[in-house]
Image (cartoon, rainbow, N blue to C red):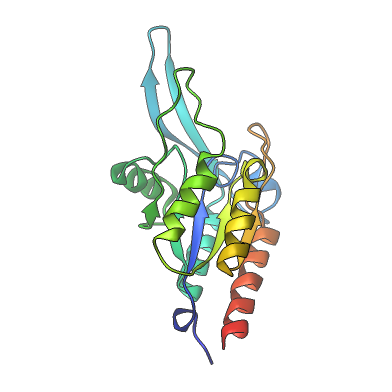
Length: 195
């Protein structure tokens, strides 16, 4: 039987907000206990702000199992993890998804926002330097810049699985069991197609 590492590489680009950080995760993961932990505390002149992550540990385990079972390369692409130290801090906090690479985020504008579509452009640049590779993107904002990745996949003759959990900061479920099943099916089809 063909193993995942015998075929073209696959990269999993993973965002955090509304993907892993999802207050409603407990609604879609059966018997899951949702955990909330403070990622960091920021001091402002007027108050102390706690940046909290709410996640389902079973989701972290499911993503780690996909990485092991299919030799998937994890790439963080989130403004939460902008340095190797912040990746270590985040992965220690959620208890998994250790390692991986990162797509550097651009500087925020003077209003505190990031340039529109930056993730799509940065993912294309990242993949362009690594030869033909299939890729999966888990990002709630994906619909805003998906077309640039569809075009990249088509022109490069590679497969692309887009998964965009709802952009809901208050009750979003993040990545669901159905998304995990879709990723596993995509990776299994990849092995069968290239065998």
